Length: 147
Image (cartoon, rainbow, N blue to C red; front, top):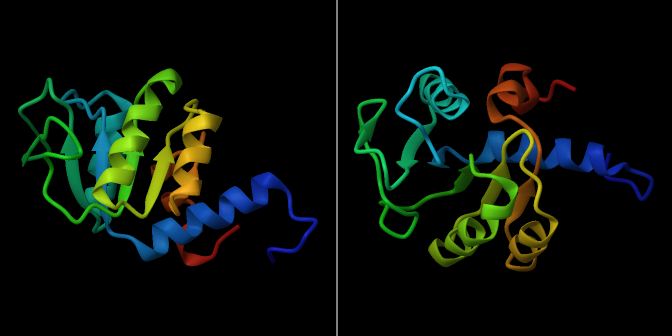
């Protein structure tokens, strides 16, 4: 595991597993208060799985029975993982916020890829996952060592 011939996909999976195992406080940036939206479903699932959810969206007052915060900087800490439900081109300011609050990881959900933001996060010591779903990875047993 972790050899020099490891693919980028394998490395990303290992990082995802580590995040799911080691961190429990997740800020969901771009969360919706509509139950049919992916951001709401993922946050609700993670909450049921025992993660502490910190909703972040300046346009939502409350979601999942929790106060929704206008920004990462306004949210109560510590925040360990920043789960991003924003378009790829809007990720960089979220990463800046994650760095500013001392988050440990940034997780960009399915379809969200921003190499520049990822490089900035890694340069600041954050773990980075792109284009993966926290719900799917957790439900698959990845946190428990499943492939």
